[in-house]
Amino acid sequence: MFKHILLILSLSVLSIFTAYSQHDESHENHGAKTEEHVEEKFNMGEMIMHHITDEHGWEFTHSLKLPLPVILISEGKLAVFSSARFDENKGVYNGFKLDHHHIYKVNEAGEVDHHTKVWDLSITKNVASLLLSTVILLSIFFAVAKGYTTNKGKAPKGIQSFFEPVIVFIKDEVVKPNVGPKYQRYLPYLLTLFFFILVNNLMGLLPGAANLTGNITVTLVLAFLTFIIVHFSANKHYWLHLVAPTGVPPVMYPLFWIIEFIGVLMKPASLCIRLFANITGGHIIILSLLGLIFVFKSFVIGAGVGVFTLFMSGIEIMVAFIQAFIFTLLTSMYIGSAIEEHHEADHGH
Image 1: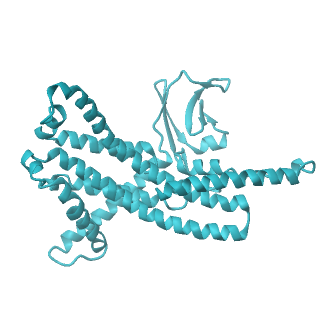
Image 2 (image 1 turned 180 degrees about the horizontal axis):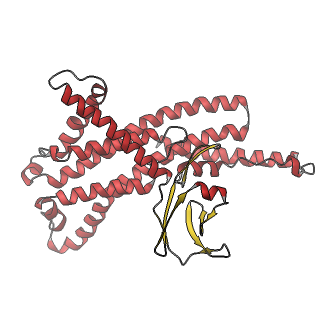
Image 3 (image 1 turned 180 degrees about the vertical axis):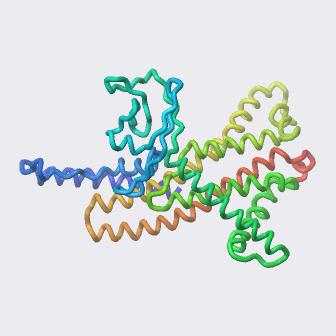
């Protein structure tokens, strides 16, 4: 709630001062501006959207951009080339046009052909970040597994000693109490879920990094995986509760089915939207604060905003851990409610 209120206030103050600064600048330069002295204005919204959206190249700074492979299928033909070709040819190359991070087919006159479907299988910034985080996770946990094998029966050392408390905490305080006696079957998935979200949340806070967990497609896939696991693992008691709940008159079943159907869909939807909104909102706040430095062009204001930005970055690091914890906790609760036996539910186990 605090973050959302701060976001609204920061954007409101930003819009007021931006409008004031633009009016003041136009008033001072009225009648005296020439083409030689026209400066390109700083666009706050464009800067923010550029950093939180996906793109076909990975731009770390304005002078350093990593080109990524563009893989397209159109009219049964495969086209593979570097995203740098679009930058060199003003967004048009090999019969394709890159417009606002979407690729379209163009005809001989250079006009966009909306009737021709283009399947974009490119390695975008988010995909590259996903592959990078996968390599990081595999490297870390292969090293942790090797530590368990090497130091069997001994005190943990090195990277194993760093991650073991986190693994034990997730197992004993999150998964085991909420999933129940059969928790070991789901522990690998839940640990993978927690560390995947955590690592990508933290990577997204680095300068020039991708906003992977702030992409609703990624959070939707994570929520969908949880939905599939929950309902493929559900027992007879869970399905009977949805279809023919105890104590409900049969005449009320149709209304109850509608309510339960909405409830079943709301669980993955809440997982998806919560992670997406919190991570994206945090990035927007930090980028808005940084943008104020370029809007006001004042050392005093810039220093104050910089200190506050560091404070907000610390909060975002905490939010990265909290969101990974909440996603894993709710997933554990959903799985536990689907696999608990009837006698366990009656006794509150």
